[in-house]
Image 1 (cartoon, rainbow, N blue to C red):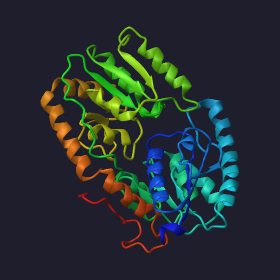
Image 2 (cartoon, rainbow, N blue to C red; image 1 turned 180 degrees about the horizontal axis):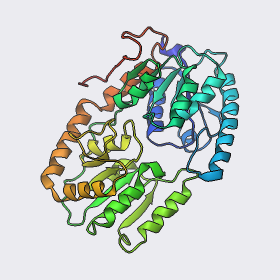
Image 3 (cartoon, one colour; image 1 turned 120 degrees about the vertical axis):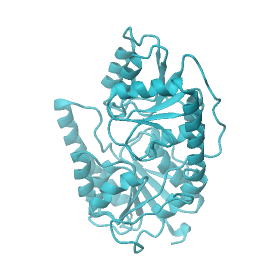
Length: 381
């Protein structure tokens, strides 16, 4: 299908512009450069404000749940159902009678897509999540009827999608390369940082508990709370003000990632729930900053990071103690991370590969049996 003939409609469930949305914006930029007509269905907010001028915006309501608890969560679920119906109507109109190819960028947008047209040839799900919860599997099953196939950002993310009977390929994430590396730091009072949306499953509270018993270590928390997660951010601030952490925790808000990461001795990815491939981990490796991360697979592995059990402050504390005291370990991880970015996660290679995998001929017959389709970026093992 020539690029000039493509009519692409990307669908995102929220207004935020974090890792998954960065990937989508990358694909949109390339689609425009290749002559496609592109529109994005998403709520009004940070994401819609970042769309290029030539890209059309289809406003839809928020389609997911945030940090609500108890009765508020039940009310939010009912509101979400209503929002799926409203979004489905907007998508039905925007898809131009089925002529536009849909790229679904978020799991929670799948039900609205399924409601918009019961079966769509060529609709692709770009999988950024590792399906783990009952809710995620239920949403994916609803959306399955609308999908031709899926493209996952890691093998770990692909496995549960294939288990649902959805043909799935893998296209690795990438970051700009080469970039200016961080200086080799060896400070007596190291700074560890965590960057991303501030929501409970990202594990900021686990990091604070870990560092509480490391009096020589300071923490910087970069990012903003999702709507509904403001009470969680307040709890983090309260914990940071306690005597064992007072004066050692800074909340930076929204930041430019690479300059911020370059000033850290260690980047921490403390997610409690599985992540398919944290983009911030790749960004840290691209500038040579060592990583401590919960062992969820994706782009995190022992060859390039110190991996720890999720939701375990003690394990995280010991990992931070080890990496901040061991200069040779930090140097080894620095070199291993730089090499992995150069060979597998160089965006110059991964971005066009992902674009061709996601936006290419979505109606083509898969070259390998259903449930086993795999494609990797050039240079991947």
